[in-house]
Image (tube, rainbow, N blue to C red; front, side, top):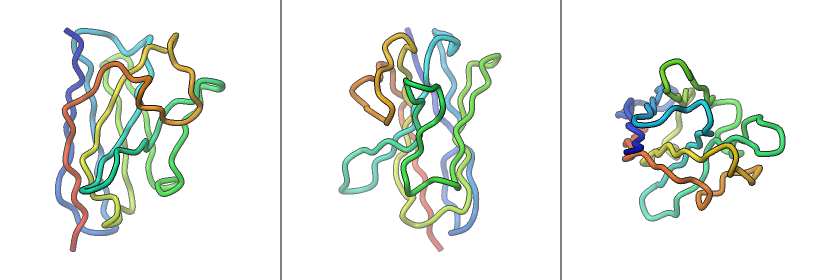
Length: 127
């Protein structure tokens, strides 16, 4: 069974950093793209960082550009989201998701493309 297991969420103060991990189980990330999404209370889920189909570079939503960095360690089948200079508006449940590279079509985060989802991890930014 293909699973993504997330960890690393927590409560931090504004300006601090967190690093989320997303470990694949039951499949290898070699042929998959990982996207990061978040859902704040009362809001729709939004894409945070995803691989662009056309170039393989990473798309970041405007509100996190320059602060968040997505990376991966294919040897350990783990993806990461480094989040710096966190703001209260970054408070949300964060999800990682995987899509087969062969099926990736969008240059932005299109959650309908993603096949496997993590369980989500809570990030709370508050003083």
